[in-house]
Image 1 (cartoon, helix red, strand yellow):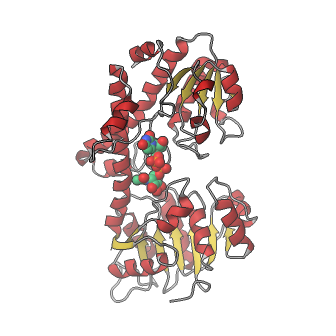
Image 2: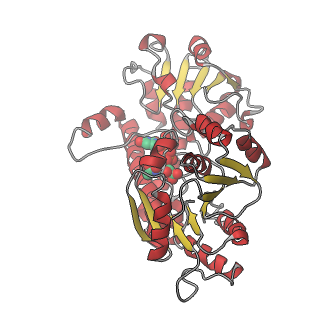
Image 3: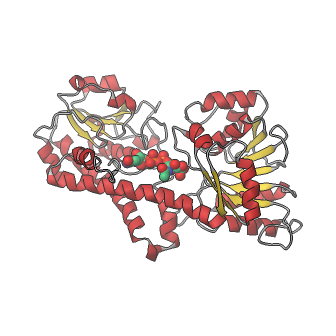
Length: 431
Ligand code: SAJ
């Protein structure tokens, strides 16, 4: 096995997963090349800076770039290990699009040589890693590709899903257990030797298909559980009961652990991945599909209740707190908070103040609505109504005396001490 400092790794895709992964591998002393299709990303990384917000990532990247262990390029180069971390979006019909994965594999094929290891980390429909192997076999008939040749194969191909939580990526990249699925058991063993270099958690080997489905199962599990909490919040709103109190009390049961309702489920993972299972096995997935629909439907419910509160306070300016898809991050992808705030901005225009400490300017979608980006102190001074959409720490820390007189619709339950006042009745009627 080559030493860490001799190892050459190419990471394809320098996004939320690829860049931290490349930096963590570079920290072991390996020579890492990050490959991305965007010149701006390549330039940013080569100057030692980052294009995404993630705790401690900027310091890590500037250090490994300065030491010459990480550099970025538009072009692939030969390496010992290739890690594919590109997006797998879905189309209008919720069918997954593995085009970027196949494009990355086509790139790898150009420089692949005997002894190399290829690992796919992108969340992918079951069977994708075998498609990657088939593509490599087609493009490189000179190499013995596992599953497509007899005798000992020249390269190893495996699937190892990322499992990191945005906001904790650098910690979880090291500490989380990893599931490593090989196209063959030998492939899994080769990939395991690579992950052992930087992962402290357990590395468990299996087949590529089982690893692919495991990743989808993890995110579908969370989606279904959040959908349960969101459905409870609909029932509680309908009944005029405080859902947060009910959940706190129910969770005192030793075998109950209800998650938190919110304005819906966002991000590029949990709101997307369950569809990969549904589209592959529609007849077998009524629960997973319904959970997706419940979580997406929560957005409309929140808009209706917020609208009722705003109409019941005709003179007040309204502050929408948060646009991010979850607390303490700058990621607005698939964000239910953004969708709700945008709809309220369209309905109530200049009355709406958007408070988002992680945004320097309002997203372009707000152009022409009349809503303005406002800081939290100005919002407290000028707004009479608050719609809490994201549980950022800075919102959570606002003491009661600064908001006791406000009308509040708190979709995240961050202010349990907020007085319940009569206008809540109008919210109940809207649900
Ligand atoms: N949410 C709730 N209520 C909760 C928990 C979350 O409404 O009780 C919402 C959040 O506000 C957010 C969405 O769900 O809008 C997703 O947030 P999250 O923190 O649950 O998950 P992600 O999308 O940031 O990361 C998930 C993680 N998967 C699991 O926890 C099973 C992470 O480990 C994965 O690596 C990541 O997806 C991914 O990349 O697949």
